[in-house]
Image (cartoon, rainbow, N blue to C red; front, side, top):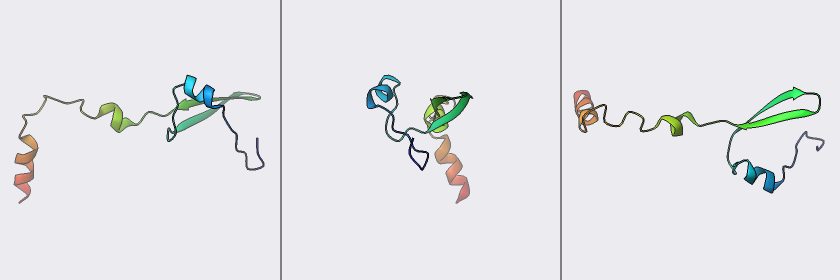
Length: 68
């Protein structure tokens, strides 16, 4: 660990965990000398498109037309 509290993680370990550059990680201390890193899921990626077929194809255009 550096003087700025930074750590370097082995590339193989990151790959095995399915982590990629740009992933947001949550760090939790689970005991003395132990940290657990978990990827934070992007809610937009998770739910985008979840309501396909719920509204007619032109519903958004009709709503936008109401603003004019």
